[in-house]
Length: 404
Ligand SMILES: Cc1ncc(COP(=O)(O)O)c(C=O)c1O
Image 1 (cartoon, rainbow, N blue to C red):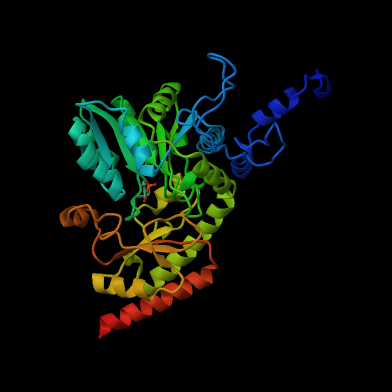
Image 2 (cartoon, rainbow, N blue to C red):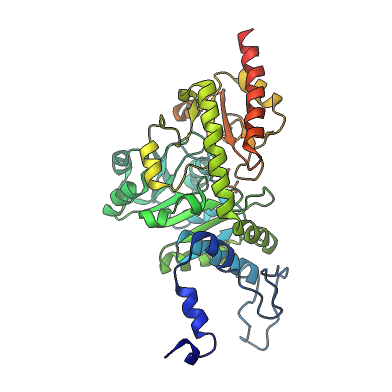
């Protein structure tokens, strides 16, 4: 049968099955023109409920906690970008991590990267132990240490790669091998990379998690989190959790995220270019040993970063030695802003010891390498020369103060 002989819509459906490039999927998957009006953007369905035509007769949607067409479009888009079976969005990244933990029951155990976002550690240390779920932190940059931490009751290995803020990498393929050999699932927090730069499911992970607040949204105007699944069983579990615990993403934030995702590929290419340039400048200025960025040849896991990631991204940390120097630096910034988030179009800096990791004890922070002089930088999409000039002048003042 030639294309002309196919039923209406059939040729288009076959076309849609052909593999498409990432940027194309980011713009089109889940984001079809509205069939009723032809609007090229998925409409924002600001409705809590949907009229039914009779008892048990609905048109696909009943109540927005369960599903909403704007959210459905976003979930289809994110599942496509991570190469997953389904995606499930939540009100924040932390809400997504909490939903992930509902796959465990009392008595179960999780092995977590030793160097994760402070809010993840707070959840695992201070919330889930109340329900009998315990955690062991392991240096996941060494798969043997992950293997050693797995117990008979371990249900999940959760890794963040690269970690926030020390930029330590985990070899996802190697960790998945050791975990799967013991019947344990692996989840990866892919927030720092975005699916453009790293796709953990292709490396053997079972579940991907993001704070969509960061690069996926990209404009610092909405919170969100997502779990991307690789099996039907996980998809059913997390759909049930969305409905039952209710911490879902609002239609409005889903709409903003759909818009952000359309430019993910171009944004990440530029973030990567700007990140490399800023890291190079800082390494020259401060010495490479004080700059944590996997794109630097001096980073101990540079080869793994080249193998596992499609680029190095725009997250990096610098060690300024003391709190006084760090404060002098952030106070003198004119373009970059001191703020807790990352992954937006604007350059943001953060002081992990008093911000993202403030809830940890000083000993725990010291164990992770987070001192009072550490500054994390999320390089934005401004002209990189302007970012470098701003960081450069702020460092100059901080350094002068130090010499006095
Ligand atoms: C790596 C990482 N994971 C998870 C989160 C939590 O996300 P949210 O702030 O959207 O709850 C963050 C937030 O900074 C993060 O950096």
